[in-house]
Length: 621
Image 1 (tube, rainbow, N blue to C red):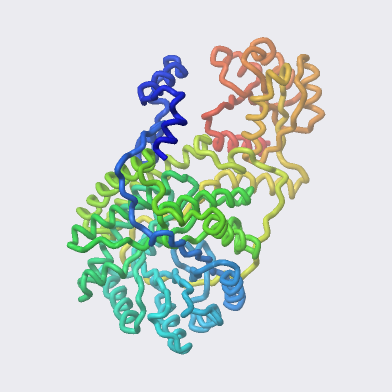
Image 2 (cartoon, one colour):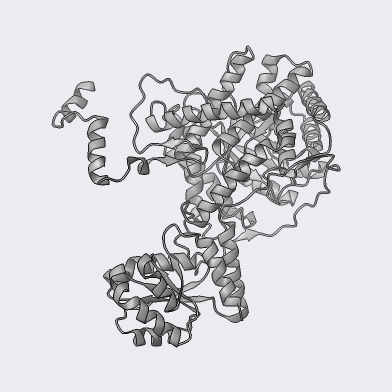
């Protein structure tokens, strides 16, 4: 094989990184090479090209060639409907059920009722002793759901050891999202360890305690912040379980992790790989023989959009692809319409089949850690490990996960990351396809199911208070503008409109007219296109006939030089009070403003602020 490769390459001269760099410098024509280097939200460098890393062993995760568990989210408030959904899911390819109870982290306003009757009804006819994986998602106020599950298993005559059950005891994640704790950490520990001991005595194998990084991801946090939180929670639970009298090597298997997987393929893969290495380091420091940590993955909530939700299918596919290749043991795909409400059968089917396609037709599980040796992912994995370990040590010095939340250590860092993320969304540096770029104002409504959500009373009195980590969706600010547009359409029969005042030939205006259309329609302002104009009076007449409230001049800088000022004055004379121009003609800005141009739009501008201001102008008397 090696000889064959040499024969194929024999017609080409050997190439080095230096050769590549010389070619790049020629293309850059004096521009800085640093412009090609990206940065993650943790400040980690992302180089434009990497060399293969030799002699790297694959990171051990799932058993070789073993598929991940295909988990399906069960969150309908009506237990009978939830049961029917669960059985359909299992009959059509799902290998596990994630039972999401109301009020838990990640429920997003949905969820099951935590009563004995509801648990029994949801699990009716589910073959719990036939290799079906079950994961319970609930908050501290719902720990009785665990008891209900155990009682149901006993009533069915099923041996607890025969159940493949993960119980997500995770009070730290709940405290982080609530912004308070009803009791001291020592009291929390007593409840958690008491529940774990009781379940162990009954014969359940676990794992029982979940270190859930979704809390950080949902709040807008970075990869390092998510990983450090998972490590801090894992160590807190490990210490608590050991202190309760459980041998450390047994406690080791009672903990699992859950991470969010998003559409950034390389960072997601590096994050999952990094967690395995970091946990192995903790195990070694504890004197334990490292064992592969069970890592569950949920596709990310924050990347889901309500507008053009079918694009979420693509985001979910990338996230599943990345988590699966990085060795996730179980994956739950959030249905593409979840941000709109309860998913219908079609959305649930797509969530299942996303995984089935990648497993059964693409055979992704056949290769263990295919990223091993890939220069970019190895570099990101290594850098994530180093940065995460540093933040984890910071939390340990602060007294651990609970104390770090009380001091605001995580909250302050995540707030800064979230602010930077929101700024990049507003300027479209981070693009949301179908929302901030390439929106579709004619899209139809996606179907979701109707159900009465379960209402839960607040848990405790909030004796220990701190800043809450509130979930967010990246698309929400743009979607609020679209909602405003829909309301105006419903009330008055028309959306706000902007007339694209194209100057010159298509070669002059097409690029900037396309930019303007996407710019305004991202906020629900319908773009009214036009042919190119040479005569300012014809342009003004076409604007007046369009019925638009706004106008946007679109053309090249060359054409602007001769026609922009006169065109703006002509638009102003026929009553156009809000004139925009695509581009940044710095030398002519003062003249154009005096002619009536009120705002210049261009790549890198704050799209969100401009659109919000536009709505204010439209609404002004």
